[in-house]
Image 1 (cartoon, helix red, strand yellow):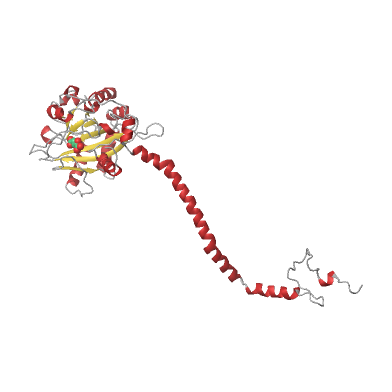
Image 2: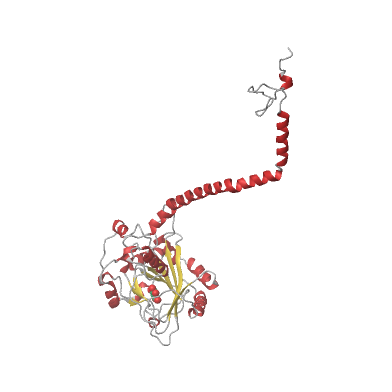
Length: 384
Ligand SMILES: O=C(O)CCC(=O)C(=O)O
């Protein structure tokens, strides 16, 4: 049996797998001696040559050239999907809600076109618009619903009013173009926004927020804890001409004709010094907050009147609560001996509330906040 090949000695036969050894490259020499040893030595020396450094560099190159670009593509794709989702689910509905279009104005109207004439004026006497100091919140509320103008006595202490007035006067004639706010008939009139960094502003806010007649009446009208949407000062000085009669929000884009689309808004004008008619005390045309058409400016010109009481004054710290749909104007300043008439203006709207209050801010052409809206109107082709 000497010519039988001993597997143990010579390795597996060609083509027969051996569970213990992988020798795909094994060759059998004519004398039966395997070349495996030679091949293994070659591989071993190759392995020795590919040092750890080469392997690390290889991995790094692969990561840089192949893996990272793939991850970047994947992340970009995921980010794009997310941005689309945020846009479609949140931003677009909000933009749609803000845009006031001709189609929406046709569909969403809730109130008929109400033409007013002079008989719609609720009074012709300034004193009728001043509440008595002991008026209850319910009486103040009913008064406001009737006239659209209600003067609350002493909503600001004389000290708070005087300090705030000093601050406003110190700024008026140094305002930059950016700080100045547009005001109708602007010559000899100044207006700018107030911020809570000024102590006299915060002191005044505390007085107003804690007033036990103004606050409950306002909350009865526009709901609890209303949002403050404007805080400015307007000063008029000798030579200021009468403004044209105007409302601060327009019927075609406000609660008056679109009660479900727009929230109501109310301004509070507080006099920071005793003010007379000659100093340009605000003029009112009461009852116009229910009007959406008619020769309103004409009859207000004839029958409108300035807000001074029977003693000829609108006193320091007295605050007018005014429905912004009410027609009014800053009167001419004609008293050469009068001091500057400084007025604090706060505007309130219902606080936005999920599922309860989603109506948008009204659009107008005079109030500070609305000037911004008006500019947006032009660029977004809104109906204004
Ligand atoms: O100065 C005032 O009394 C009123 C000002 C006003 O209504 C306005 O500037 O829009």
